[in-house]
Amino acid sequence: MMKAAGIGIGAGMGATALATPAHAAGAPFAHPGLLHTRADLDRMAAKVKAGAGPYAAGFAKLTANRHAQSGWQANPQAVVYRGSGSPENYRVLYNDLHAAYQNALRYHVSGEEPHADTAVAILNAWSGKLTRLEGSADRFLAAGLYGYQFANAAELVRDHADFELGRARELLLGVFHPLSDDFLTRHNGAVVTNYWPNWDLAALACVLATGIFCDQRAVVERAVEYFKHGDGMGSVKHAIPVVHEDGLAEWVEAGRDQGHALLGVGLMGTVCEMAWNQGIDLYGYDDNRFLKGAQYVAKWSLGGDVPYTANRRKKGAIGGWSGSETASGVAGVDPGMTRPIWAMIANHYTKRRGLPASYVTRAAAKAAPEGGGGDYGPNSGGFDQLGFGTLAFSRDRQEAPAGTPSPGPAGGGVRTQASASPAAAGDDLAATGSGDAAGWIAAAGVSAVAGGLLMLRRRGRAG
Image 1 (tube, rainbow, N blue to C red):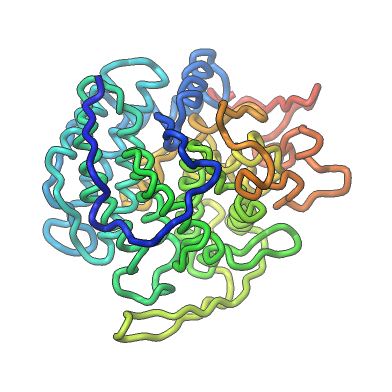
Image 2: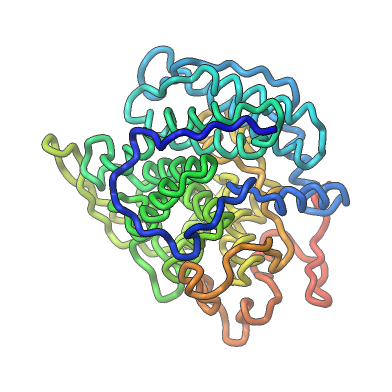
């Protein structure tokens, strides 16, 4: 039996009146329903049991990670500091949360109970001790990143007999969510453009995940409204301000550096996926604007040339020091740099929606099999995404669980004829149903194409 407790919205909830999305009004939230639905988890388990690639390679990546081992011992702290304060101990939190998530995911794929027990023990330990987040402005990053990660790990074990569901809700609504919502409202007392998009997007991911996990509709609506119309740099039209005729759209943080641009794309994808699993299509909002921005970042990160419109933004504190900064061109890139963000995005657009996305799929194939926290170095940047997208988000073409948004403008502005990849006449992959072949072929290698199926060269156990 679930241990549930109904509690109110945290004190940081903004007072902005929000319109209820028509396609979400009155519908109960689906659980599990953050990054993974029940259909997703069942698909992973069945595919791995059958030894199907690329799931088998993705699962092997998971089981090899030290965080995914049962018996991981949590080290909960009453106060977590990031950026300043003593001790600056946020690394303990993100390592424990990734261990909880990885063990929970491993349990759903393998059915091995010790992994579920380990995840529950870690999450219960933290919900029983953590009281606040402190530090520099980085405390807002800690709240956003680790809030959405806690919610996703907890969502996978919310039905476990020993999981303290009520206490988990209290932690999200009382510790993580108030800071994240306050950041979206006041931006740490700074002018609204002071912080680059990833700050907003981390907070947005936490607010949305909290609303879904805690069944707080007003919190979910707050996140959806901010994604579409928020004043900060992380709302979709501020993060992706310019759409070009070739179907690519500038990601504003490409004028800063590659790592933060990848972080932003990963966080926006996380927001879109969690919303999608509740019947809210942010992926398709504004004629697939996120796809166009992701395509831009993927092409640029793979070493391609992309345009950039000079961006001048105000900086400083309200009523205090102020100035401005101009990003006049894209930053340099390292084609070898990657984050585990591409499989989720590529599979949504090409498999669920049948849209071409050649640059995104090339980036996904290059990064496969995607790992997670602990596979990308020991520093915090390697733990910003939960990862394991090759296992979790690979899917058959047009495979969509019942209840997901249907194509068409009513589901958030999706137009299946829109393309964010240059395509020759007669090569509309959305219309032919042949899949985004060009992207996967270019990066993965193809030995044969027959009957509409791609036969990929075997890479070790990846298949």
